[in-house]
Length: 444
Ligand code: HSE
Image 1 (cartoon, rainbow, N blue to C red):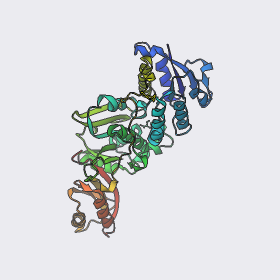
Image 2: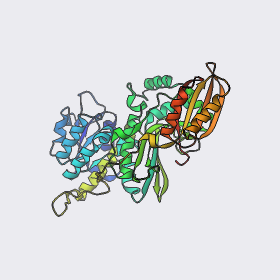
Image 3: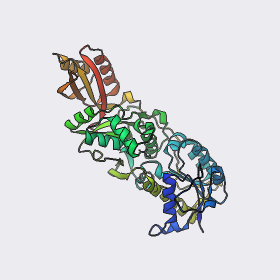
Image 4: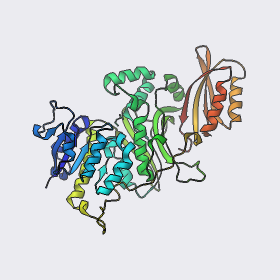
């Protein structure tokens, strides 16, 4: 008996998926039981994958409604028609495998509610960190743990840009332009460089790690456009590298709601000794802190045809294994569908997410100021009055005839820090405050 796949999309990930499915040799024997039944494409054009032309169609809807299809694999990306096709497939009783983080992060609620009612699985290993297994470990291998925090580099484009800025001492715009020329960054890089792609991914990971749904607009998100070569050099001198981190953790600053979470994406100064500091280029890595396991780190390729297809096909096999032993046909006594609780999404409640101004963080801030007596004393006094404790102050040289002063704070309440900064900005000796970045907290 073959399990029939309806593949929606034959771009980079779809082609990689078809290549694995067409070449089962030396891979898991269950692969031989998977058949590509139909393939949906947006436009008919010559393809390098040896698929019979008669199974390829531009009528995407006919695939999700095809009674013979068991598993719909959605790799067309974008919000629509992907969301509607996923929902239609579910309504037709089909299992779904998707790489679509944007759809899951925004419409996960609607999709998983529908899937649970229909008794089908929606698996998404490929949606976060491409080829790195992290969704299934969170659902299964680490499920005995109380997850305390997860922190990751989950966007390859920005990690590539920051790594090159670090290595070459170049500024953001120059590296972005070159990355676009080389195909490492999209023509419209917004989703990557503004942190939106990473925000989708951390929303999905936190939902799994903490067992609650996440409202994407509540995820604080700051990208890397403002990072300069000067900041990377200062960070380096002070023993840090700058990475775009996606962070989700239980919020220990909360006094009443002990389940409150912090979920955020922002550039972060990481000590060079930190396990994520040496994750360079397009690679991704995710560090998970659980009780009692401790720290577990996942590292690997976060995108690309083969790595993402590896995750897609693993999900297809997971569903095929369930179909093979007939576990998909099991129901509760009242006839409602019974899904494997470790594979299906069962949480219904929304998490409370702490507002960013209530968080306690270390900051790096760079000032340009007149080189006159009392400036550093003023900074110290103003920060002190707002309860901001300074860890270090360095003034290395002049830039454009102005003194460049870099301050690193201890862990401080973000709201207090912002108030101090607003006051400092009005001081006449301060010419500008070109950079404000977060530093990994001493507790993280
Ligand atoms: N655009 C993503 C990245 C890859 O740069 O990591 C797909 O998730």
